[in-house]
Image 1 (cartoon, rainbow, N blue to C red):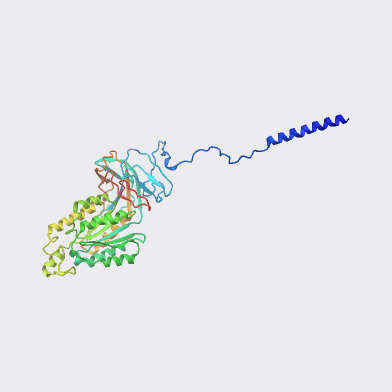
Image 2: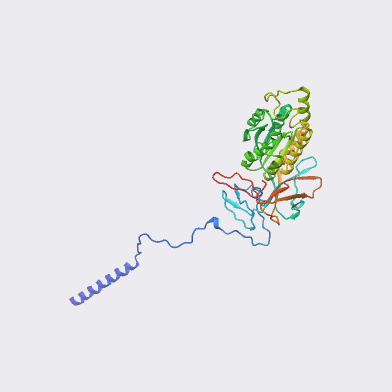
Length: 418
């Protein structure tokens, strides 16, 4: 009996030990500093492949810096990069605040369609336009209508020849300001022999008015330098739509660092419209000075660098001045107006404001890209009768304008005329 009990105890002990061993095998094992399971590396957005559209239907692309061609909504804040022509048609996109890279072969043109009275024509369809690059018809890839605020430079000639017109020029400049909307911005620049920025871009009508009436005439007329300085110092740092309304007689007498030819070239390259308001001061200045012998005109003891018998007093110089203002307007896609009557000025200012605010945009990829630096002629035609088109008439391959970008970044945009 005792032997049986001892044997039973031994068997029970062995069973307990076996159970404990089996329990130890099923308990989870604690590991210090476990190694994570291998995962796929994070995707770098900048290395994402371009998205290709395999659909047989042509993709609708967005016109950079303009309204979305499909949603008609303004695009988010973006920076356009790339200044040299590319042969690839690939595109890559990033979220808001990122960079959009596009094929820089794209040429985009602002187009104004006017009736015979100079009023903007609405409702023009893409099918009514055709565009030619160096004489070869192109396929229009982008077509939108835009209406948005703009910045305008009032460039006031305060040289001796405008002495007899200065009050009219000031009144006319402020009359133009009254045509603008609350979100449009104005900067005021005055020039004679020198150049003076009177107010930075602002929507404050009081500041604009005070700047206009602070303009005082001096001596000499560096018109070419004033145009060049306006482009380099002011327009190239202004974002968005922009234009220059130039109040002058067109005669230059003292520019040494710019010329007729160089400034027209600069105007062709800048993304701004020029609207000269021409004052024919020949009779009032040349005739007035000669008949009254006004040799003391608030600019020292003489009329300045342009006197009654000096530079800027011949009919040939006035004719050249008119030709120059016409070239400014034509090269930029703007228009020239004669300041012969108040009624004409009022109508001109209404038309300029409307034309700046509303435009069509046409974009295309040239079949022949051309060589970098090559000047190419572009022509836009319309089938609608009794209308006139205003737009750029040439562009430079691979020649972009400097774009104002976010702080700490620099960029040069391709040949867009925004």
